[in-house]
Length: 300
Image 1 (cartoon, rainbow, N blue to C red):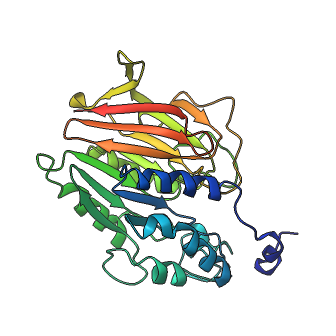
Image 2 (image 1 turned 120 degrees about the vertical axis):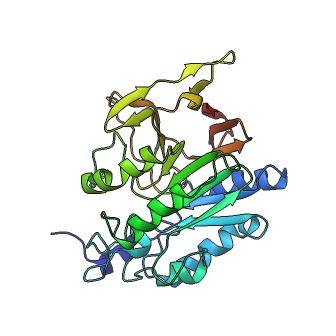
């Protein structure tokens, strides 16, 4: 028999990687290295225990008090049985998005419509909710379509798409991929020439080729420093990355990645990004040693 939401109280503890990750990010802030942080769902895993929200908010305060701390909603903030979530699971412990929206008021259009976009320098970020209706012709779908189509790519050349549940992951556990979500939303990314799609949910790191409909449309080429470089002057498809390795117990990386999977790492850390008009440079940094374990760049 599966556990009830009440049984989950026995498992509440500080997530194993959380302390090292926030310490590493805080040191980036101290070095004036960061302008903003994006946390793409499953924010505190409080699941109804407000004391854990208090602990988490205190934990991130050295970072969130100094740079913008932008979020997306995940299953552990929103999903609950008999709520309007796409997924009828007890994952939020009855929170149904209320504490999340109270603690993290993002620039959304209305309550319980937690999708929005912002622009920072040369990057347009489109942030969606995988837990709210994304089906074709839904309110969120129409918003995504309009938002991404409206970006002035001369002024803001980079388009980065973010949501919680991934479209591409080699992990086969806990319904990692929803084919209905992929079928509805992936064409929008392709049509609007999204450069990079970032997701969480699976607790490890994985990077793809330029991929669309499960096929590599282009492979990166190593530059003089050996860094995988994607040429988006000749756009082929988005690059996808799962970056769910920031605190919760890690999922093992699959030894048998799909053909579109280029890099898989199961260590705690974060993705560091630096954008100019012509380059989007990304590095997966491990939180304990601060070592760069994967780096790639997208050029225009």
